[in-house]
Length: 354
Ligand code: SAM
Ligand code: SF4
Figure (cartoon, protein in one colour):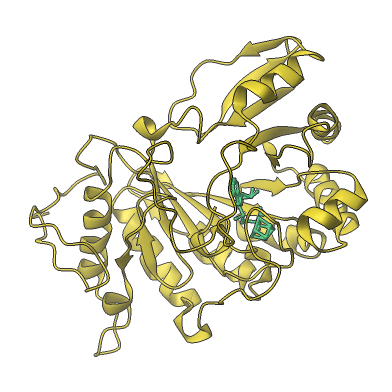
């Protein structure tokens, strides 16, 4: 296929160089195979590190991509080399058509074969949806849980829904979906005395706990480097309980992983702040309102709406591919969280898609 010259909408940065055809490769040689699709910015929780308690400016309902539009973008992306779709949000299970989204996407064939469908969720509606999601073709689940103490859960998420999350995790543990992963953001003075308990909770559910360093992505812009719990502190806490043996072969995965006391259980740490893994990043993001982002921390976006909602009523597949390639081509070598000039993106994590 010929290289497509890039013409992109006003909200996007422009580049005069045409990205190459073939795999979705950036100017640093990174091939992109993973598209995170945010299905909504709405959520049933209000985690302090993600959303404000009140006053959130929701995306306009008319701007949210429809089922057909999501499938259209996903088909073009798969044709260009994307092999994994991760559904996220906001809370993806708040989408009433979530089962149909999974069904449509799971039927897509990439040139290399069938695609993988994964989901990151707070778990609250899993007991209701899980059998239908598996039947529709869901392959993998990550469920977020930062504390297993009820009072803390309420303080942290501003909602009294721990029991619902626990039921969701139990449903996932009883399902055939493996590997099952549980995500926890480690926070000083909030849950940093609970790290061992969280790992034990995960292993009791045949799951891998993955600790995430807190990132400057909260809608309230309250992140503070001094209070974030680092990868090394997490490992120190866990080392008091288990021997940790590093597992090699991480590839493009965001988590470093360790075997606990020789296995079979494992633990992961996603150290985006203190040990960034940008050099191996293979991820792209699609927001619920049709903006492509080449990094969690991007301050610019590539607008798919003009090519998805063109005046003749038909999506422009070549245009979508051209915006995808331009987005990948425009990716910087790494995020700049640790640079004094770092600017937090305007969107909170719930509107980006984690
Ligand atoms: N609502 C779903 C959930 O919580 O799993 C999916 C969306 S949520 C934005 C995806 C992941 O991002 C969750 O694991 C959450 O803990 C993580 N996250 C949100 N804000 C974060 C932040 N400021 N730093 C680190 N991780 C964050
Ligand atoms: Fe909702 Fe997930 Fe953000 Fe928590 S982290 S507020 S569950 S989107």
